[in-house]
Structures are given as C-alpha cells and as structure tokens.
Amino acid sequence: MESLGLLLDGFAAALTPVNLLYALVGVTLGTLVGVLPGIGPAMTVALLLPITFTVPPASAFIMFAGIYYGGMYGGSTTSILLNTPGESSSMITALEGNKMARRGRAAQALATAAIGSFVAGTIATALLVFAAPVVVDFAISFGPEDYFALAVLAFTAVSSVLSRSVVRGLASLGLGLAIGLVGIDQQTGQARLTLGIPQLLDGIDVVIVAVGLFAVGEALYVASRLRHAPPDVVPVGRAWMGRSDWGRSWRPWLRGTALGFPFGALPGGGAEIPTFLSYAAEKKLARGVAREEYGKGAIEGVAGPEAANNASAAGTLVPLLTLGLPTSATAAIMLAAFQQYGLQPGPQLFDHNPALVWAMIASLFIGNTMLLVLNLPLAPLWAKLLRIPRPYLYAGIIMFAALGVYALNASAVDLVVLFLLGLLGFAMRRFGLPIAPAVIGMILGPMAEIQLRRALAIGAGDVTVLVRSPVAAALLVLALLALLTPLLRRYLARRRLPPLPVSRED
Image 1 (cartoon, rainbow, N blue to C red):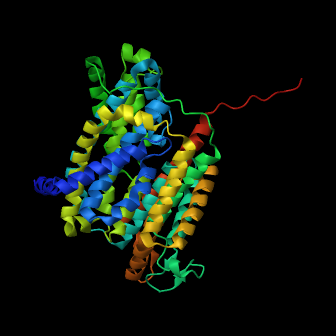
Image 2 (image 1 turned 120 degrees about the vertical axis):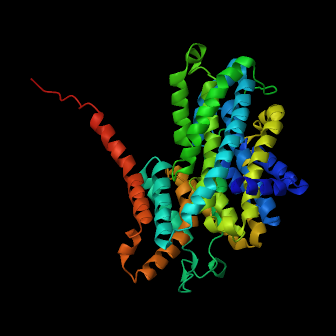
Image 3 (image 1 turned 45 degrees about the vertical axis):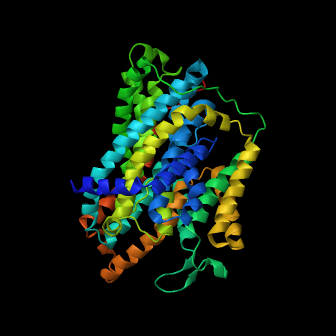
C-alpha cells in the first residue's frame, strides 16, 4: 500500500503541465529518431542524452523515459515497413511484420505492435511498482563485497549473452574497463591513462562514450556499406485492427508480457531471448488460419514478440533503479544520465530521492498512453520519414552528435575524443565486437573498483572476504555459470553432430 501512495505522489508530479509537455516531447523525439532505419532505442537514447541536461532532474527523467519508450516503439515501425530491425530484439518483428506489410496488412501490423506495446508496457510498469520496493528492502543489507559480486555478474552476463562469442564479449568489456580508468584515481590521486592531457584528468564523460560508440560508430559503419538505391518502404494508411485481429492478438500480448518482464529484470536477460521464446510459443499454439499464415505474415508473430520486447524494457528498470545494475545497453545509458545529475541508482535513491523515482515511474504510464494516442494516427507520417536518403540521415546524426557533445563543456578535446571513440565503435562493429559490454564496463568499472578496494580494506587484504557473504558467493557462482553456459552449450551442440564419414580405399 505504501508503494501505491508513493505512486500517486509521482502522478501528482508527472501530471503538472510542464512535465506533461516534457513527456510529450520525449515520446515524440524518441519515436522520431527511433523510427529511422538502423537506429535502435540504445542509439536513440545516446543521441538525445545531451538534450536532458538543461532541465531539472525530475523533468529530465520524465522526458528521458518518454525517449526510451518512444525509441522502443520506433524500432517496430522500421522492422515492419522496411524489414530493417534497429536492434536484435526487433528481428522477430521483422520476420512476420514485413510479410504482413507486403500482403497489404501493414496497418494491422503497426496497430498490433502499438497496442501490444501499450498493454505490455502498462502491465510491466505496474509489476515494477510492486517489485522495486521488495528488491530495495533486500539490497539495503548489501556490503562492498556484494556490490562487487553484482558488478562481476553484470560484466559476465552481458558479455556472454549480448555477443555471439564469449571471447569477443570479454574483449569489448576490457575496452570499456580501460576507458573507465582514464582520469585521477579517487583513492591515490594519481593520474591514469591521461597521456598528459589536462582535460582528461576528470575522466571521459560517459555521454561522449555512449554517443561515440553508438551513434558515430553506427553512422560510420552504415556509411561504409551504403548503397545508393532508394529504400523499399511499404505504403501504409491509418493503423487499425478488425475484430478478428483483436481476437488473435490479445492472448499473445499477455503471454509476451509474462515472458518479457522477468527476462528483462535478469542480469544479461535482455529482450532477445523472450522475443524468440514468444515467437516460438505463438507458432506452436497457432491453430487454423494462424498456423497457415506463419512464415507468410501471421499477426500473432508480431503481437507476442512486440509485447515481450516492451515488457522486458520495463523489466530492465527493476535492477537499474534498485541496484544500479544496467542489464542492457539502453539501461546503461540511462544509468549514465543519472550519474550526470550526481545520482547513483540503488536502495539509497529510493530513500533520498523518492519524488524523482516515483515521478519517473508514473511517467512511464503517461508516456505509454501518449505513444498509443500519438502513433496510431501518425503511422503514415512515420512511414514517410523512412524515405529520407541515407547519406543525409547519417550525416545529420554525426552533426547532431558533435553539437550535443560540444555543448557539454565547449571543449575541442571532447570532439576529438568523440570521433576517436566513433572510429573505435566502427572497428568493433567491423570485427564483430558488441558495443553494450564496453559501455557497461566503462560505467560500472569504477564502481566495481571502489567496492573491491573497500571489501579488501575491511578484510585486511584477505581475498576470501569476497566470498564470505552468502549473497556475494551466490552472485559469483551465477557469474561463473553465465560465463560457462555458452561454452557448454556449444560443446554439447558439437557432441550431437554425427561423425563425418571416413572414406576407405579398397
């Protein structure tokens, strides 16, 4: 009941005219940028991050939540109309959604994605309201060794789950940890990896890292593979659904929500696994016309995965707000936004800044409703945006990224660092290294180092202090499992393969 009272206080703050305007601007900007080809929610949030720094914290995070949900919605539009997923979690939507669009059912595909996102986001946010205080009560008792183990779990889970190779994931994590070391050591006062440049003594701003690796790196990568053929966009009218479409969609929405929220709340769970599971479940449960349409444009194949995708987005906020633990690239950039305001998500955030936290959670309900009302009639407008020529689009992204970063400190050094990180992001994409572990390593690395030093100081240098706590020991075991599971799965897959025939010469 206490949570409901705090949520009502959050609605009182979020429903003020100024904050409603920020929420509307957030969902509009998020959808506008997220709907453009090749730009997923993580890149959308990174690109628009500098905008929020000129407003008060509560208004900024209300706007930021709108950008987050708007970017999630925009990715489905791109997948359905252009068959170009903005990120891996939208691949399943593209499978059935684009086939629906090419059969003349683009309006129905967009409608079930929009309404499913609203249903899943609303239910998942309600679950967040009740789950967050429970996790906070548990996390209050955490010691330094527990927080260090939690960071290790985040490192290993994200490195192994969000990449095709554990080695590549760990390599990306190592780059992020090295970037996080730049600056003055908080305990010894020694400069580390600054190359004698005074502007680097305070470290590299996390906004520069996020925008450089995501926005500039992606723009350079796409430009290197750019073909000048115009995009093949499916025409679309006003998004709508008939009675049979509603009957076929509401169950997949609920099942997708049930799959997405818990996976989003797990370290390294992400949105990819629940969207694949939702698609597989709906395909197995399909009967009659739905079974015949699978692979040709079944509406269940859009409704379920889109609901799972958006429910997992709300699920990522549980560990982010209660433990300060980002479980996805987008959550990592949101953590960066908190740090820009001098705030550290975790149990103390709920105690010291309850008005901010609950206003942000309340704004998720408001932003979800705004997205539904805004995007159903504006689907034809978003479709026209997809016809923007790619050279203009990505040149604009680089210009906007440079302006946003320069506005932070008016420093030319920041621009040089931005483009160097953009080249690093391009190289990482070129050689198959995931970006998310690098960003999470850069953000959580300094925190993990501080907690490790504190734990060792308490234990007088005895490393066994790191496993004396049952919570820390359990988290480290989970981290080891997260690291070994992909390797074990690959080993078992090889064992199942039949042996190659041996040719014998007579």
